[in-house]
Structure formats: structure tokens, C-alpha cells
Length: 555
Image (cartoon, rainbow, N blue to C red; front, side):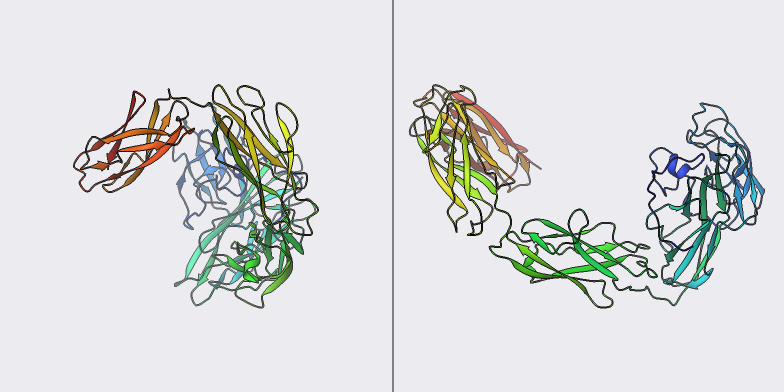
């Protein structure tokens, strides 16, 4: 039976000896049982252990444990202390495969310092791994088949081993054999080679037998010879779709939202070595701000990671678009998608200025994500001004804002506009306080807010609190931004903070920087050079009887 890789409906369980599925920090297909690619030459001496490093004792099936033995052969192992290497020597050369015994110590069993044991034997049934051909031109496809005729329940797990850059791993490892099937086939791409190359491949099939015992069937290495003179195939797309996040194909998409591009290749031609790049474009090009191109990995028939198409958010009317995809071979496939204006939403709230002296007024502005259209059911925004964060008192309001100490009112954004402004009045405060101006609407899936700082008036006792410079280091000639912060709002007329440099030849600052009335911070620029003979320069700021210092360092 030929099938594509399956993902079982039931979870993968740790079978009795399956190192690849059960070892710590390993996932399906991980090569815990030694090195992934193994030499076609017979290994005479090797090391075989469990997950805790305890060496095995007994007759052991190479490739079924954490080992570097030749797969499919039986070794004679002597055990030993943890950390012992070379504990196994070649015992029996099997012609088809080896099979682990029902009483073997599981690789993952917690046995402390005890010696794990194995009692394995050669298997002479149908070969676990066969190819449609053992010699082919590099770049060609080869059909691989994993076979297990023993009873297996609830399913057997087939791991394809020995893969390289020339014969890539399975697309979605591992493969599964359910109780009513004895074989599973897949199409394997190969790489173009400059000279003949032989790749030793093998299979590890893990299953529970009819008694419920966990078993591992390991094939001997099966050589696949790749010959020069070939080219990589370039399969055309068999299907293409644009879908939502749930995988449902779409015909319309709101501006600003994402759609996802998927493609499949014909059932007989998976992606070649190196994968298939699918280029996705839209017409008109401005319908989407990302192109949604994606890769189909080697050996896969479809992309595991969707290409993301983000619809433009600048539309004021519907835009019909055609989304096309091509692998570079065959005709491009396309899907028609109508991009609609994005749903109207509250985007931000701005306050100008964001810091005032109590009793002053300011302008609040509600900003939407786009202009209001005649088709919009509503563009009225609910605006709430909180009570003082510190005092709990009503400190700010605007026309139509009702309630106390917090108040709520509405602001209507006119058709054709994307913002509306309103005047906020404040009350006098005895000490600095803060209120939050928040905007939202039932028709908007987003809300926004901004914080207003209200300072007391006539505060002439503010002094310098801090001096911050960023970046604080760089190569000679770099510039930095300095920020001075006062302990309270600057008085009427502002606060002039004096600045100085310990070496004007190395770094320069203005003589002063002014913090505007009612504000607590101001910034200035410090420049370095033309000489940078010192390793550092100290910048000093002074105001209100207090000084703060910070340093600039030269790399």
C-alpha cells in the first residue's frame, strides 16, 4: 500500500524500546539510537547503552538502542560500569534484519546502576526496508517501502534512518502502520551528484507484538547508489488556496487582517532536495502588504508553514484582487479575493500637552484606524476620564462628560475624518496627580488610553532629581541624549538647568537646558570630539541647589 506520511489520531505513545520516541528531549524521528548516517562498512566493536549510560549485556540488535553499532546485525555485549565504551563486538551478520527480544530491558527503564540486558536475534522475514530501485540518477525519485508482517497494535512506528543531504529525512516523521496494514510506502527525492555516491539507508520499526511486548525490528543497511548526470525536478503546483486561520478558503478579507497561502504538489512528485519555493503575488500589487510566498520542504507535498498575506489597511472602498502562486513550473494558480476596508476601530488617544498645571485646559484627540465612511453604522466614541489616581477626586472633564469622580461622555468623529478633538479642563491640585483618558466603542475591537499629568501651580521649590545620558559610550564622534528630571514641575517661566563638561575638548554640552513651565523633564544633546584623548568625560547638571553627574565613555 502506498500512502503519504500520516499523523495518527491517537497520540504517539512510548513503545517498549523505542529510543527515538521515548528518550528525554527527543521527538519523533530524532536519531537517539546512535549517529543518523552510519557507514556501510561493518562495525566490529561498538558501544550500546540505555538512557542513563549503563552498558548493555547479552545479544543485542544494532540500531535498536543508544548505540553506534551497524544496524541490523547482532552483537555480543558484556555490560560494564556506567561510562564503559566498546562493550559490544560483532556476533552474527544478519541477511535481512535483527529483532529485539520480548524480555529486553527498555532503553528508558529506570534501573539505577543495574546492567540492562538484551536477548536479540536475526530476523529472516520480509525485508523491513526496500526501494523501487537501488541505483538511480541523482535528482530522481525513489519509492521506499517499510514492511512489517508481525501483528502490531495499536500501530507500528516506522523511522527512516541514514538520511543525508542527498537523501533527505521524511517530510513528517515517523510513519505509522495500523493493524490492518503491513507496509507503508513513500516517495523519496534524491540529490544531484557529481560522481557516483552510495548512501546506506535503514529502517527502525517499533511495535507491540501480540503479547503486548515492545519489539524493535531493525533492517540491515540498504545501499542506494546515486549516479551523476541528473537534474533536480521542478514540480508544478497541483492546488493553491488562500484561507483564514482555521484553514477555510476565503473570498473576502478585511483590510489589515491576515490570510494564509497554502499549496500542494502532485501526488507523484514531492518537493525535490532543497525544497520548492512558491512565489505568491497579488494584482493589484497594493492589495496586500506582504506577498505570502512560502516553501515546500524536501519530500513534502504541501507547505507546513503557511505564507502570510496581510491585506492593506488603507482602503476606503472594496478592492478586487487576484492572488497567484507559481513554483516556477507549469501554469500559475490563482484565487480571487476582495479586500474590504478594515473594520472601524479606535486606534489611539493623544493629549496636547500631556502635562498641565491644575486649572489649565488641553486638547484631547481620539484617533481611528481609518476615515469614517458612509457605510459605517456609527463613529461615536465613548470617552472616560478617570478620577485622580492619587487623590481619587474629580480633576478633569469635558463638555458632556457626566459622572463623578470619574466622568464619561461621547465624541463623534465626522464622516470623512479619522479623528476628533475635544477640550479638557482641569482643576487645581495641591500635589502632582494623574488621570487616565480612555476611549472605546461597541463597534471597535480595540480601545486606547493616555495618561494626563496634573501639577500644582507656583511650585518654585523643585530641584534637580536626576541626569540620564544615553548611549553612555561609543566611539569618538558619537552623540548622546541627556535628560534632566526635576523633583516637581518647573515654575512659571521654566527652569534653566545649568550644564557643564569636565573636558570640552572631548565632549560638549549646551550651557543650559530649560524645563518648560509645568513640566518635569527636558533633553539636550551631548557631542564628542574632535579629540577623544580621555577615557571618559563627566557631565554635570545643576538646578535648585542640587547637582547630578553622569559620564560619557569612549570605546
